[in-house]
Amino acid sequence: MSDDSKKPAGPAKETDSRNFKAGIAVGIGSAAIVAALLYARSGKPRKK
Image 1 (cartoon, rainbow, N blue to C red):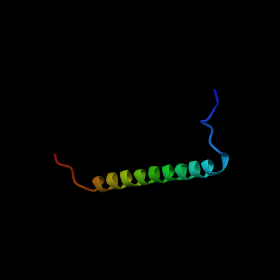
Image 2 (image 1 turned 60 degrees about the vertical axis):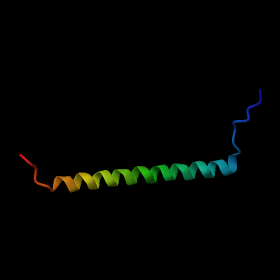
Image 3 (image 1 turned 90 degrees about the horizontal axis):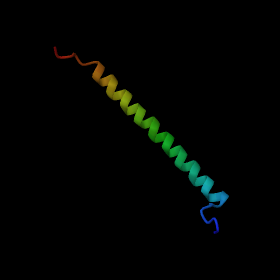
Image 4 (image 1 turned 90 degrees about the vertical axis):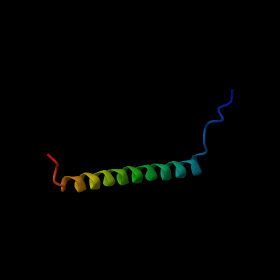
């Protein structure tokens, strides 16, 4: 059996790094949206 699943070191590392950075950006963006929604809801008077 040959191990064909190994990726070349050059372009694959660049792609992995780009995907990692994109994942970080999506996570930070999601956290910012959640924080904005929580902040917007906290200012409204609550119904009793």
